[in-house]
Length: 91
Figure 1: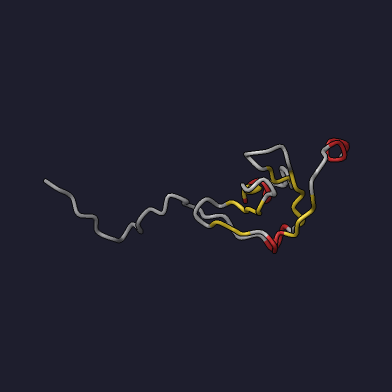
Figure 2: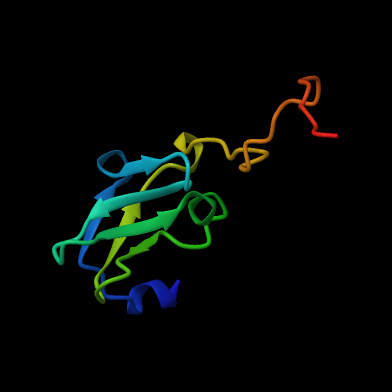
């Protein structure tokens, strides 16, 4: 992958050292600028990228991970109620 070789990364970080946000389904890691590097779980699962970026500065890190050890994606991230549960309706 010639494109990956051109990207200058600040560091390489093991995914075990990152924090996973289940609600947003992203991994994050502290950035020296005070913000945090972020990468979406879906990007890692699709193997689209292994580069986490900081939204506040130009730094990037490469995430070292094993695809088989990633959390499974939620089939319905909206958290809807089960179909058999009654929902009150105003008339």
